[in-house]
Image 1 (spheres, rainbow, N blue to C red):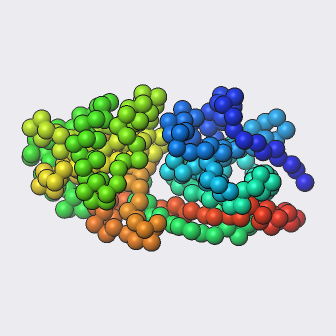
Image 2: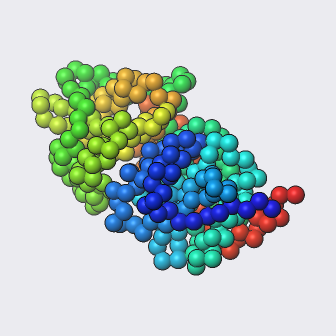
Image 3: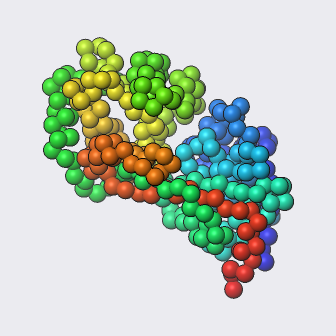
Length: 325
């Protein structure tokens, strides 16, 4: 039976890690070490590299909390990142080697939040099958609202009316690299008032990340009479545009600011992308849906794609021993 070597990431692996991310079939810029490093003080990195002899064939962006390893908690998605030519039989053996490595290092459980399928450049459900084989527990499912921009999509009449309202109100959209105004005037107050939480990223962190990934992180503000009324920060990959933050002031419905902004992004700025990912509308770990938010996204023509979260016991590597016959 083929053996794969697994070891922890070290700073000396910076170049080979990033080189692998650039060609993997299910990676995005979030896995680049320059992105992951911005919150290194918050997480104990436990990322893994998988080798076939001396060739790097897979990576796992991860962090560790006590005796549990997570596909990185500071990232929106993760799991097993694979080379383009990865074969299912080898991926099963890779995953067996990963679980064995974790178990030998006193890690009892591996928590995985899968990469949504539309981010992959090729079919990449090998890990989902490994979850079945290892009797992983499905702990959460999020329903993502996604527009397939390669096909016709239907925008509701009420949404069109709101977009036109934005035009009539003379709203101005500006792409900017300064995040302070949006963060301080719109985003932080709204998150605090509605959910009593703060943004995952600070304005300073987002400014740093944008300087490192200027093509992948883009920010847009909406102004009414020179006053900011809404904004959004968009993470951009090869074929997917994903709003990471979106918020408007109390007049957003009256002005049509968010609808005007998103119509502009979808039909102009990102019209050449294949996918516009609105993210989920879930609360309480996927068990509840914010109907108002979901309706707003679907009124732009978005459809549902599911992102699954799993928990697998590392001792279950033994269940992979007799799979290949």
